[in-house]
Image (cartoon, rainbow, N blue to C red; front, top):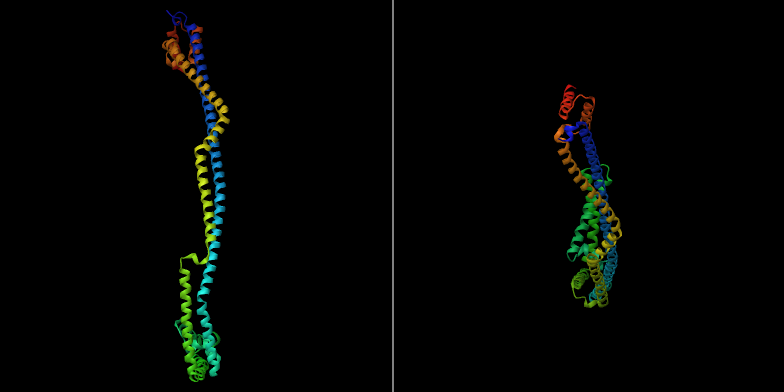
Length: 366
């Protein structure tokens, strides 16, 4: 026979102590779980901070390295652009000088033709304005540009002026006013045009004829000058302009820039393969002792939690075997056990079974 039969009260007192002890273990286990959780969070937080510090440091160092080389590359590129600009300026200057040199005979010929035209006017007693371009445009245009200029002049004098007077100066308007303006315009400008033409073209026909011939030659020379200038500008051979010194300087500066680019690539490769690991090791070594201490604290709390879990399982099995099978699972609490002890102390029951029945009757009656 066991204690539960021989001395139910002592059995219940013992069960109470066992249950209190079990609950204390459960409380310790809960504290241990919280401690494990907290120490794990602290360790992971500080470890993440170290990782972030490593990444940030690596990023900053790499950025500083790139900026250092980018500044050199940018300066070198600026020198290359400046040298190329100076070369382009020298080439443009050479092109202008070449154009001036190769077109000089044609320009000189045009000057001589203009003097020749003026000399003809003087010799024949003709007005000097016959040799002017405006006269040629108005009476003997040569080439498309002069014909176009003549059309614009006629439109200006016989359209723009009369219409302008009619719409902007006259307050009262009517078709008779417009007709009147046109008649006055034609009389003034048309009459002047015819008068000048009769006194020059009619009187000095041979001079005008020679002037037209000379102006055609001048126009032909101008076209030749433009064609020659265009051909010189399109010429891809830069050997005419003595640009070797500029080309050598550009080549040197370009090589210098390429060297900086290659150095940057090598430095970044070295940073990726060597420097990053060095930075990582330095930071990890500086924080190693701190992290190891936090990890050890976490592992210790984990060990404590595992031990308490094992102890809890053992105690739970012990309670189930030593107490629960006699009083039932629903009475495995301090309130019921204390209530049963009180029943026994009052003498309301003598055995454990009677005590349990009495307790259940009291609960049922409440």
